[in-house]
Image 1 (cartoon, rainbow over the protein chains, first blue to last red):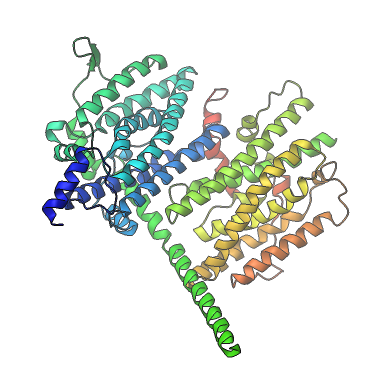
Image 2 (cartoon, rainbow over the protein chains, first blue to last red):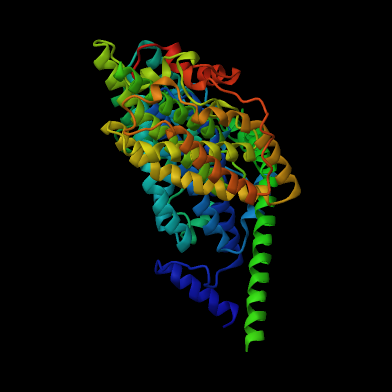
Length: 325
Length: 258
């Protein structure tokens, strides 16, 4: 089939909501967009382990400690599924890792903010995981099948993460004066970065139009952002805490909450690498990679030795057999 | 008093698991590859999970002995000072490199397997129940860490060197494993004869030496100075720092719900 016919077949599948499998023909740009998006998503899971891991050793109870460790471990698992999904597009995990460590690939900017108190574990669960879920639920229906399958699994775990975060905040909000202040402080710091997680405004988002045409994305950045703000504006009432936006108010006509202007200078500066923890996060990833090199090398060397041994024993056996013959 | 022995013995097991789990959880997010990050995190989860069950039993005992003491798993874990902790010293040692951490798991898991393997027959139901669950977990830890000790010992020249160094550092801390404190006897094990601990030690030695030999590592000379005291509350400098970090929130904001 010529490219034109293949393209036509691909377009029809997209049109009819038939998922694209790795072995199907796909336009080079579609492949490139997916590699960028899925690997970026995987990197975000891996870098995203760091801000929460920062509180594992200081979790206030044994139960909270177990839940937090399990949660961070889930993120490692999510990273793994996503790297595997991306690998079906003909890129290796090593290549993706190299792109992350060299700074060529991006990860979600939210993880460049610091976790300063225990309440941040609550705010990350409620706001950051909450925003992630809103971004990710439509991805369960994304047009590339392995990504869609991975996202279905990930979303199930994410909703548990969000609930545990909200529950941490609820406990703090009902606790002592200091605990309540801690919860409010965390929301103050995490609110705007979470709102920024939906990316630039639609008008400034270069990839949105094409991604929506390919049904990789199903909703625009601004639509998803609005959904998130509407959800949080209601949930914060139950906590008895405040969202740090004086312009946040219900708009009866739009049936949505209006909200204040995002600080886009901050947004772009964190994207460009000048966030509060960009350097720490990258150094931690690079250190883990470098310190682990001898372990990976040893495992490879050992496997090669074992292979050689089993090969030589097979050779011996076959020599014996041939002698007996 | 028999209950006091059981209480202290339970703490010795629980503290060893908790401190080990606390240390291993420092690896989460920093492992050499994702699969290993997940694996070591699993071991940390198992260890802390075991500690919780044991502390819950310990709290029950304490509340029975001292009515009104309101002990919980968390008061026991977060509100005692280092000298009250009865963990084996090896669990509090810093993680060091990946090889040192793997070797720590290897030694401790083999000890736990011996201990839990006997404890499943204990007349104290709470302990035998925990042992039954924990035995499955530590059997996996034994297998996982043994595989990695072989791989790293018999991998590259660098990995062998690192493992040998870790072995020399950790070996002296294994002596206290099978030197029983007074509280380790009465009422905990049924029919525990004179040679009870000697037999466990022999079993441990045999299993451990076999893997170390396969890993082409050399056991340190036997006259190496052996460290002990963890089981009665004598610790290294490392434990105080570990507790300062672990207990920070409970100490800074006493009496709160979290």
